[in-house]
Length: 155
Image 1 (cartoon, rainbow, N blue to C red):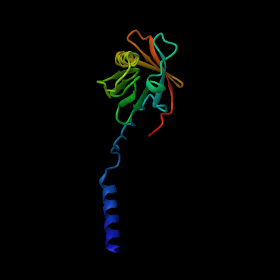
Image 2 (tube, rainbow, N blue to C red):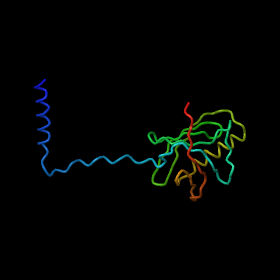
Image 3 (cartoon, rainbow, N blue to C red):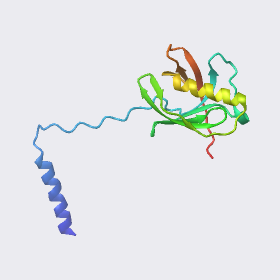
């Protein structure tokens, strides 16, 4: 046991002496980029285009958008179905990739709402975060959608 302690001490001493004085240390790795949607990740749609009364979709569920900064994926409820999509953030630009979702039977009104919501998410290309409000902006930088943070119940 004593021999093992001596070996460890010797190894530490040699590694400390092997570096020449004045040699620059390795720079620390840069911190991971801060997710701009932190501290809120779960959002509910409160305004959609010119509509002041946002329909709540099937079974009175709100339309949602949930960001997962670890996987760069967003999920949500789009009026009848749930969806998932990859996203990238570059400065104030927010781009969504290819949407995938469930295929539940929907009413014509739910189909219309869902199609409009997913099309708007795909078309929006900028975001603006003010306090606890997320705005998604279209190509003309006009606000297309407004979201507020929510707590989504976990199953």
